[in-house]
Image (cartoon, rainbow, N blue to C red; front, side, top):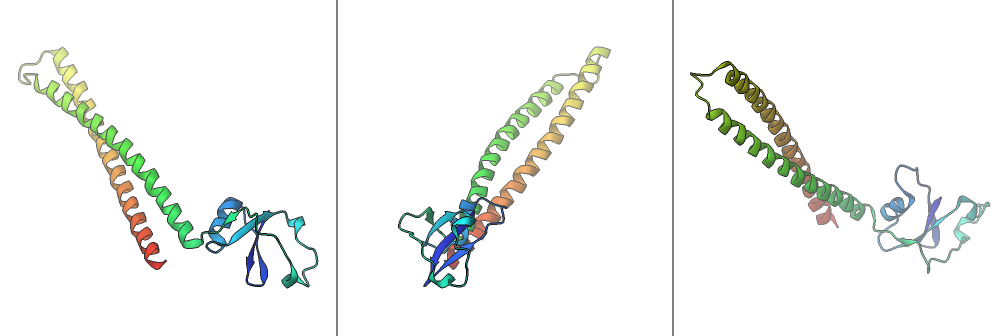
Length: 166
């Protein structure tokens, strides 16, 4: 598949590499508000000698380019949206972990640690192990939230910089 678009008195051709979809390449690489067509390689004239005389009807186009900067802003905004949803999910998990930690701490606080029978000693040790595991998980989730938040801020900063350039 190829992308063609009018460029002055000629037709420009883009050969996508396949790293992203043809439609995404067209949105990104065709200048803003310029119509484009997605065609088969075989639709191009074989003789490239008179390339400046090529013609195409762009009145019924496959879309319009938005340009690289606007495309990059779109991609950053998609990451921000996705990461924001993930942060919300992780915050919910964090609240659950905090509730569990509080419950275990309250339970452990109900024991008279000076006068424990063997069964109570085993129960306390199990709960201490559970508390340690919950605390480790809490730290992991907090770290993930922090990293996602930093990435969101970086993407927002980059988006703002790009918007100022437009």
